[in-house]
Image (cartoon, rainbow over all chains, first blue to last red; front, side):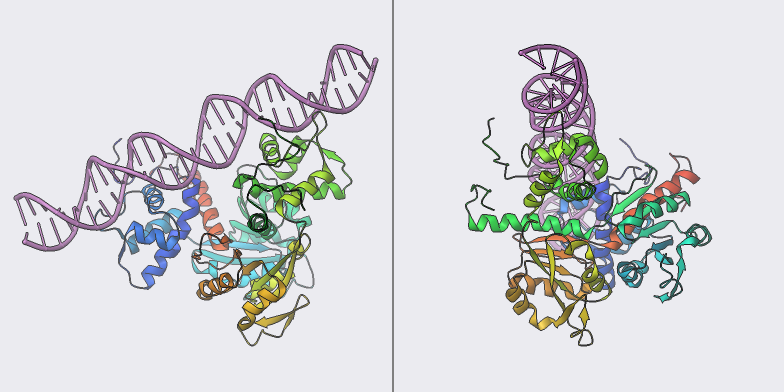
Length: 229
Length: 229
DNA sequence: ATCCCTTTGTGAACCGACGCACAAAGTCGT
DNA sequence: ACGACTTTGTGCGTCGGTTCACAAAGGGAT
């Protein structure tokens, strides 16, 4: 298998993609602290992963990195940013400006790199017209127009569960193919559309499961019957 | 392999655990609509998974379900709830009452089943003393006392990144072993502690990656060189 | 220029998860 | 009471991801 300069297999494993933002964050921290190069071992520790995994992940992007030395921090930041598509600017619309929507609008975290909140939309006439985080809340009737006018390509759904599917359909009809969903429903979408789901309640339930097991194990033996409850 | 009544292998795959809350939600919806029994096919559709996977998941809890008929909705709700530890009440403390912390405190979603927000804590004297969602915000100095007094076993960290690790350490020292972290940092914890991470910025970056690929594919051919950027 | 030391990039074994496809098991109608 | 039909529970092949361990590649010292 011979490779030209950097053919960079179009086919980065999903698990790797999910970790790249982690590496990027660690690298940005190092760059700010003036670190010039970093070994896979140190970067892996900073990102909370195993160093072999880190190296394999990075090898999917190309062969950046110098044997015996490590990786150039700045260069790697650039390469990962480019791979993730953060060298361009993404216009994000937040649909649903309740408590969560407001929190997201004010969250500095994603404005920082590549993402820009371009619109806030809600159905409640009480909220429409308010200024939040320097943006005017627009009426949901404007959804399609706003998406097209501002070039929105990523939509964050922070609506009540009952409204989510309908709004999702409209957003997709308006041409959006990337959705971050906070509503506790399973959205049904064509498979050309990417949906990522964030669900607080599910996370808590998973924690509760493990927590229960820990306390079970303390009170009874590891092989104790479970029907005591 | 013979099994007594319901030995229920202590050893449910992590992937299964992560889906149980999904099934539970779908089942609760059905129960409210008065559905008495459901087939794996229908439940799988409602939960957005493949029916074989659903059956295998449920088989890890025991052999509930009747061939030729399906699963009794109420019974399955109970079994999954019990397995997840939702038949008991979990006291949750929210540490950090900024925009996000406030949104979480007001989020009805997790109060509903098994979880109860038992405390809100913050370091900002401006915020301490406020009433949010019927709870008084307490000073972070009270952290250890509050955790012990109220029997808090799950902590939600919604603090700025800079404060997260220190607070995490304190929370663990106070005996908590389950943490839901919203701060964009990699927490280092002993492996007796479970940390689940929710990171908006990472989710957006993953979406951006796939979005970029879609648009790349549209403008150039599928096998086009990538260095045009 | 050569040797030694460090660190990358990856082949290969391993592990968990997924989905197909089917036998076992139970229901319902006659 | 029996047969046809439905739906579960699972054995098994497959696949993606993780980890180990090491050869290849470079840097720096002598």
